[in-house]
Amino acid sequence: MNRKTDKREGNQYDKIVKENIDSIIPALMSSVLGFRVEEAVVIREKLQQTKEKEADALRIVTAPGGAQFILHLEFQVDDYLKMVFRMADYWVLLKSKYGLPVRQFVIYIGNQLPKMKTVLTEDGNYFQFQLINITQFDYLRFLTSDNPEEVILSVLADFDREKSDQALGQIIHRLEETTPDQRTFQKHMRQLRVLSKLRNLDLKFDDMIQNMDKYIDAENDYLYIRAKKEIISNLLTNTDFAPDRIAQIAGVSPEFVRTVQQEVAGK
Image 1 (cartoon, one colour):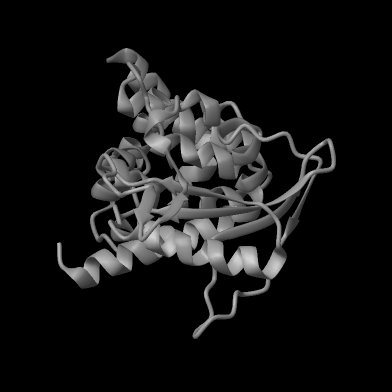
Image 2: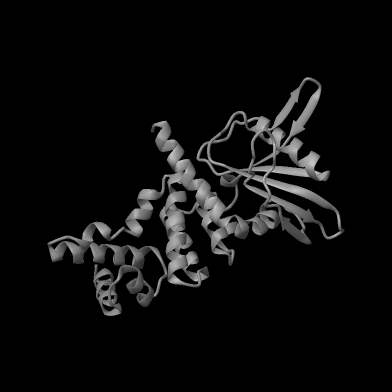
């Protein structure tokens, strides 16, 4: 994979994080970082240095006892070996601007075991940030959430002994349960597809939810119908979707779904 491809894919992951950041931060603070939070105020202003620096997430957190601190989160796909210097740079800017304690975490969502340094001890100075590896968390911690943006994180977590295709089916089903409308559901499905690539599950995802665009212009109706049946069969086998829901996703009538359901049951 070349650098341009790496950068393009990295931008995709960054976009998903930015789209969902406001929704997943409260859950991360409680279920992953273990904070008890009375209030968390978003810091939206950029940090001024020689050039502007924009952190992934900044919050002024107030604990139940009234104590305040700055929460700084960075989401990282690649194992950036100089991350400790970047985080130290942020610490100086945040500390000098707000004068509050600063707690920093890198949320690692990459596919390899990270080797980045989290401690800097040079020239008589000491600095440290905390590294959180999402792959070490049980996927059920995210799957049981009522927040679809948090449910999506399940695909990055540890499936334990669950087969990957079954876990993926559970995630899709939970997204359907927690998403209020079809447009939002489709957006989350696109995000899930991108993130599934980090776990080499994109082909399994495509097998379950095939992109029908490539069949739309097919001249042979048989190929079109066969493709529809394959999608419906996968949904019937790997999800708990009702026939009406499958019909909506596949763009067919509920009667067509029930016909395929009978064919699957007869095999």
